[in-house]
Amino acid sequence: MTSGDIAPTGSYAHTFNTAGTFNYHCERHPGQMPGTVNVTAGTPADDNISITGTVPFPTKNITVGSKITWTNNSGMTHTVTSN
Image (tube, rainbow, N blue to C red; front, side, top):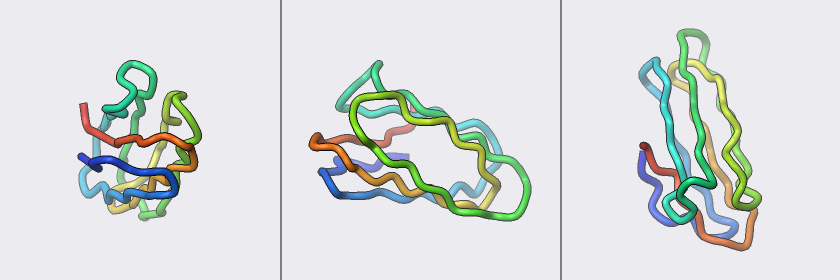
């Protein structure tokens, strides 16, 4: 996963097609904004993450085929980047 820069009010979406644990972070704020997505078998259900500052991303538990959309609701540029 590599979102590139997500400007304020911008968004990035990624569909998880494989089960597993996916760790990621914000390249602009290393060490401050880690996150984890845990993907298991089941019926797909999309989810959202609101970026509101330089706090860690919430851990999300989703199923294979689900999409997460990150929306930047802060005044800073962020990224969503696989570790």
